[in-house]
Image (tube, rainbow, N blue to C red; front, side, top):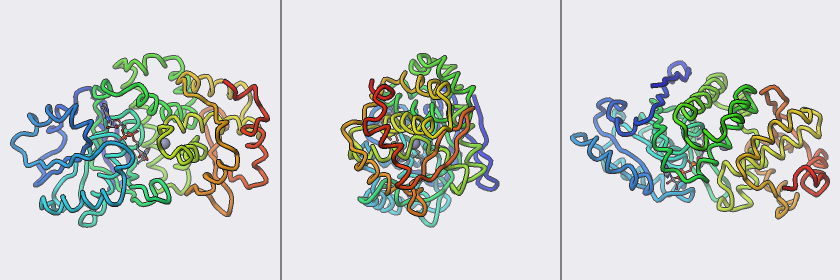
Length: 363
Ligand SMILES: NC(=O)c1ccc[n+]([C@@H]2O[C@H](COP(=O)([O-])OP(=O)(O)OC[C@H]3O[C@@H](n4cnc5c(N)ncnc54)[C@H](O)[C@@H]3O)[C@@H](O)[C@H]2O)c1
Ligand SMILES: [Zn+2]
């Protein structure tokens, strides 16, 4: 059993990483008065039965949501809150979020506002949720005007990771998570980036030792960043590398064309190319980054979107300041920095995406 502490003073909590923790969930939840388990239909189908046997004798209510991003709405949060009220949950109750980032975000959000906050446990079942969304306490839902626009910072009681449940994930969902895994190497730990490169096939093949090590390192990195800057006033922003272009692509693709991780992989590629153009990284480091990104086989061709579309979508980014667009750029050696680009600086993007550098981005 791997154990990690997220050090946030009175909001500190532990992350447990081991194969088989879902079927031993009762060991991690104590004896709360009332418990509600929130999950989605796919996860319920795959793991519901094993939980039935296990949670027998406990008073556990279940809320099973339709799978997918369209579930993350205020309307759905209201339905969950109404159910929680009907089940008689109090501040001594517990919410268990069993699922991917969608379930984790909406269940955590409901836990954060129900009676001004009740405890919840994250049990992430996708790679993306295990290495990213379940750690750090960002919760929320989408609004018609934008993704994750309503939410809270609300830390869970613990995070229970079962590496075994990843075996039922489709390959596309694994790549979705690997996008964030690669990001951690680039922004925080160059040796880890080398490790990802050298062990890429074993990560994708879910080789037990390798995947456990990777998940632990990702949680560790996220934990140290969040411990320094819980509310994203400074260093936490580096977690957004690849996300300025990535989020714009997700918006332009109506959240259907790309998974989050695919959009981030493409975003990281082009943002690294921008960093090279600006002179923040040399070609050697650029090649190191892009070699790993290309191993995912995600198509890097963005030609279908014009630069105008992209800039329009990026102007809506929550991190923008003073009319400038916030980018996180790699600066080499496993480090990244925020730079604010104004409209005049976009010639770099024009050069890259508008056809100026064909050799480097044609695949
Ligand atoms: N809170 C944060 O810090 C944070 C960070 C990154 C992303 N997010 C959010 O996370 C969400 C994306 O999360 P996601 O990629 O996990 O998507 P998801 O929750 O939609 O899960 C992807 C798909 O995998 C299925 N699934 C889940 N576990 C499975 C398993 N073990 N086996 C087979 N299928 C399984 C789900 O039913 C779903 O169809 C987005 O809404 C994003 O905004 C939040
Ligand atoms: Zn992300």
